[in-house]
Image 1 (cartoon, helix red, strand yellow):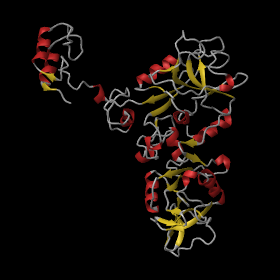
Image 2: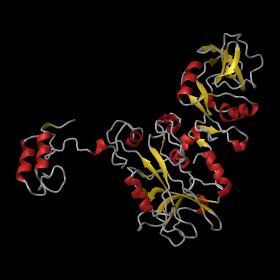
Image 3: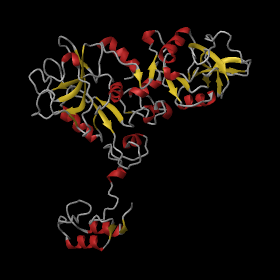
Image 4: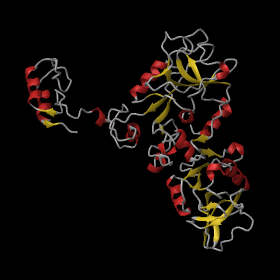
Length: 467
């Protein structure tokens, strides 16, 4: 469920969610906002307004339009107070520009509010676009939250301060399926699919009905992520053992999520909040039980902290144990050898770790959901396979989360595994005819007997194996 839909669930379940997706923030309706999402984008060098505008569109967004003092103050508080918003005396580009001599927003929204610095705009048409400005003498470069009109591609030095815009603020407001919720939040929390990563729900691009669910989401490298994909799985049947969740994740081509940094934890947590994946207990005090994660400890480990490890072998170098409950504590009779999220109180699920058991104890049920992570790159092209399967770039006909091309033996006739199919492999087949393959493994197709099918594989792949 997207974040605002989750807020609706919170009215009945007491659950309240985060309002951040990476560096983007939402101006929540509950806070008097419009539900839109905003992000400060860093370029690292001078950037023309026109280029910033094109890049915003490519992100499925627009340059920010500030149509009220409330929106202006929200933007200023979120971004303009940050040092990284500024390049010398210049703040980020916004979506204001001159059209036929009149100032307009790129979105076409009404020009009903402005925040010009006193005396601005003063370009008389020669400075056709706007950004935030910091005015000061010498090297002081004192900052304001007001606007200035400026040249599209200016790179100037003035009064000891760089005068040139490096950054821009984008805004997501589209609601392509008219459900009253901004699409961007639904794409980034996985409640609508966006497998091509353009911040537009795939269902809207395909002209099909948009079904709210729990879809895989990529932690994009461009946003400081690792390129892995994450998804909350909520099977039917209620609470399930950690081992079952682990096996289910493996059957999908992934593994239970391994959270090795605060940033990764925040991202995985943001895609974990589909309705039904968290349970509010009836215990006193109440608890909010989250999904299974990929951490566990051997049953014979020294309790409560000994032997914790990630199932995929990554180092156990970062933890987020719930301190108020003194986790891990192997409490309630012990057996708490598996990692999940858990927080106290029904109003605020949090990404705190808890050592858990199955079945649950102390009136707290075991998780009924789990977070899957996909990271494999079997064809070594630098892209996680699972995303390429979702995008239709790689086939996965058996639906096991592994590309078919990676499950095919590239040189099935190379019984001797020496990189070439030749007389050695032919002799292996003939000398083991009718057997299960012998020591050399002459059963090339793995059907349990060396026969004509294996001979055909050798003859059909004769010569050097593909590289």
